[in-house]
Length: 589
Image (cartoon, rainbow, N blue to C red; front, side, top):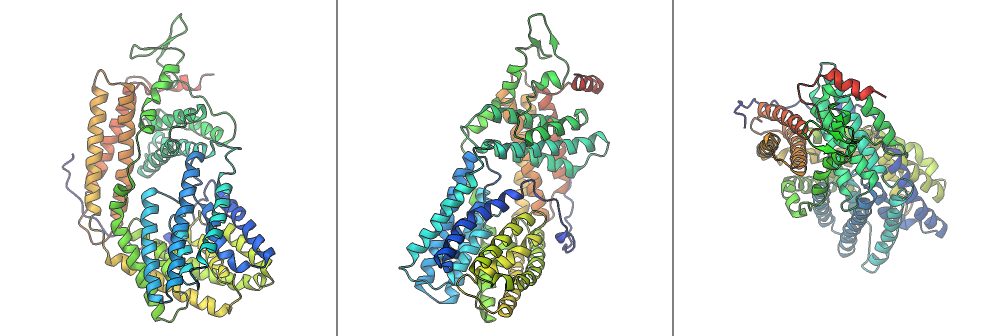
């Protein structure tokens, strides 16, 4: 471990304009947007036909589950969506029973805050999202303040369950057409990110940001591919080889052809055959020699039949990792205890203040507070700015669409569908832009049982938004994360141990392909975790100085070891091989 002196950490300025800057839309923004429309429309239109639009709030609770798991392989998506539906039903059941047993607003706010904390912790621990816990919290908090009787609860839950089952079918509908669509997208993103990093390195202006983004994209691709455990396929194996190529590019960006990576990425995004990369020890190193028997001989002295054995070697570690059981949920919940406390305290205080101001719907303030909490205080502040701006613009949009929505039940449902589509289509650009549609959506939902004064709704929403943002952020400041520095130390230790193991195997004469692959993957994952942990800790306030220099040195040493491990595996030429030779081999017909 490096003994470099820690440098003082300067508290970041609170961003305002930067928090509102628009980014690029998600590659698959249309998928959740169309899915939520397809999930919400049939149950809502059926209730319009039956004249029971007042029950649409319960069916919409189940329909909104269609927003989840679009980045998961379909085998994993089936399980995740089922758990999301069950989680939504569990929160809804608690809320409905509480609403039927008491009308004490303070008690109901307390129940809503505790539910929000549990939903936040479980969603973060299981990495369910986007949209993480906010949708679940909105559903459970809103129903807390709808008058209920115990006799009505089973029927309302049945409506939500039926809509949730339909949402599950909507989420799984693309599987027969593109069975490997999520894995293809994740692989293409990893290849493009690796190409972007290689371009900066080849230009002599290597970017730490591009490198971190590339490692994160490759790690995300592996997580997606490994999510479909025990379901090997020829297509998935070909995608895994392409992700290996992206990893090789990260290890030696100067020896990588970015155009080739982008060509592969474009081919993967389509529905055609996944490009077969062959054995990188032959394609990239350009150092294998053909003998008269139709076999290839590498510089490690091993003979391979047309590269097929080399391809299998690449994925031995992948198969080993797929066989490893995931960490138990309880061990992942432990580090999130402070975030859960922040959420519970902030939501409860926001609801209490809203009640003190005479609000009829304190759950709006509660949900606003619940939506703020991110990995650190700086990101929480940015989310507060985005939420306030988005909601203020959103109430203006609500005032504009209200005359149309009140033309009749069908018009109201169509406006709700349009807001659902707009929210999912825009939220990828920036959270505040999506909130512009989410706000009128939430206000229109309150009108499902009957129309209400527009001015009163707008005023209450503005007040509750400001209360939720201010009180929620104040609670986040009060509950300081003083363990952020210790998590960075643990991440540094993990990187050092993974680097030492990989270096030892790379230097050893008898390392197996499985051991080398597992060591390389473990080190890459540790580097990604270190960067994420350091970035999260740097955004926290009131803590001791972070060892920023040690983090940088650990990352640099890890990247050198990754390159050495890749060369030991035969996936890269040795340093003595010229780049000209490699390039000639890569571009030859």
